[in-house]
Image (cartoon, rainbow, N blue to C red; front, top):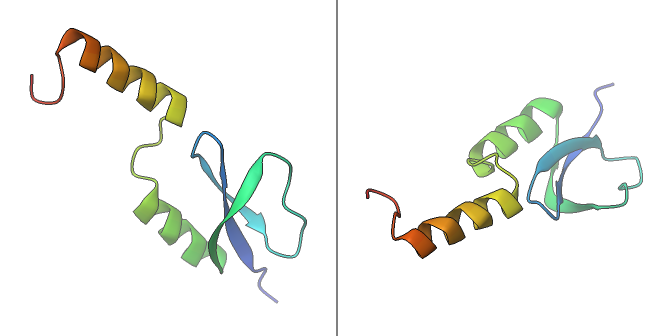
Length: 73
């Protein structure tokens, strides 16, 4: 019988697949999607388009804002 997975997300907005029958580990929150492994992978692929941790994205954006070198500069 195939295992049902759920998609989890952490504080850094990184995603993971985890067996739905298991207790969610500390530091992770259900992202509101569950299904087969393939369905969960497709969901993550569609929603996690920038795989850098949130803190890195924010630091990069702050640096660009401070120097005036945003997108397309």
